[in-house]
Amino acid sequence: MSRQKKILLPESEMPTHWYNLNADLPAAGVELPPVLHPATGQPVGPDDLAPLFPMALILQEVTTDRYVEIPEPIREVYRMWRPTPLFRAYAWEQALDTPAQIYYKYEGVSPSGSHKPNTAVAQAYYNKQEGVKRLATETGAGQWGSALSFAAQIYGLECKVYMVRVSYDQKPYRRILMETYGAQVVPSPSPDTQAGRQVLEQDPDSPGSLGIAISEAVEDAATREDTKYSLGSVLNHVLLHQTVIGQETIRQLEIAGADWPDVVIACTGGGSNFGGLAFPFVRENIVAGRKTRILAAEPTASPSLTRGVYTYDFGDTAQMTPLIKMHTLGHDFVPPPIHAGGLRYHGMSAQVSALKEAGLIEAVALPQRAVFEAAVGFARAEGIVPAPESAHAVRAAMDEALAARESGQGRTIVFNLSGHGHFDLAAYDAYLSGQLVDYEYPQEAIEQSLQRLPQVD
Ligand SMILES: *Cc1c(COP(=O)(O)O)cnc(C)c1O
Image (cartoon, rainbow, N blue to C red; front, top):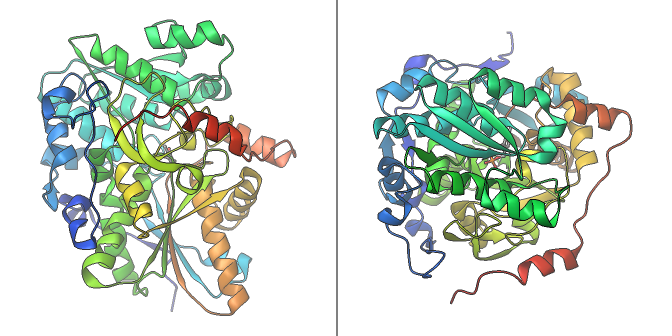
């Protein structure tokens, strides 16, 4: 009998609804603290967020409905690449000589090469519905900017992308992809905004950070009538849109006849691909008494879940965004310029943070050389070159597989391969030529940033 390598779903089995974890958090005894206004310290209401987001997304941010229907026009765009394949990693299992069964969900088949269009398309759609003409956003590695440029183009919206300086310099092809989709791209910090000028005055050579770029995009949207802001991770509505990933995966594992997974793994920058894959499994743990371990993999260079504190902080460097209770390294923490640009963020999704605080998920921090070692091994066995961000999940899955070999016990491992690394070959070049270095962030530097946290009781 031939072994089934990839498990595909027909378009007719694409999920019709997004899954909202917030509906099931009370059953787990987890409370999501309110988001606070940066000036007053009071919980924000829909009107406070209206300058930045369309009302449909603000309502999704706070809804407690368990399922939110995906509008048919969004499903139609999703069908360009969804459902995405689930693969069984037979060759990699053999290379690792592990008794574990490894499955990976592959989100790199989307037009821009990652999971991010799952929310970019939804966000562009709702903005278009409400008459918005232009979107402003930031991008780290370029994945989010590419996704939003693609989605904005579909709906005839203008798109301005503030791209973190270090990525702008390292990844010209990401910029060209965004421009091909019709977006305007500037390096951040930029002279186009107050927030950008402020940083440039103090440090003309600033490598930038997601926190700084977010400040610029938020300011752009807040100061223009025709423009709204769009965020590629962190917020509840973003994670909501990503839950098509986990819902499809559960169905595909069923078709494969797989055992219910022992461990589910994804990398975490702001938490969206992690939430997307993991939340439907978290629900099974909460309501069906399953015992799946849920593991977040982050870089040692930006270790918000493993070394940050759980407290209220700004989402951006210029302190313009609402305050979110989350695992944070401090809003002015500038992570070292590692190649996984999409993981260089000081904070974490409120939902993912609350799960970590409640002990419902685990987290591990990984240095980039070990991450690339795993990614190269994976590419040589499975053929797909992982994005440096996704490679953190690859490494964590590899460590689980090696632990299974060590103990001689099988286990079922599922991880999210959140994107491909075709635009990240400079990073692979650095690894292959022995030039990658590991970054362990000095504790005192983290503590210095944490001293500047906002005071909230
Ligand atoms: C942006 C990105 C990430 C990190 O963002 P999350 O919101 O944490 O998912 C991970 N993988 C890829 C491929 C990305 O583009």
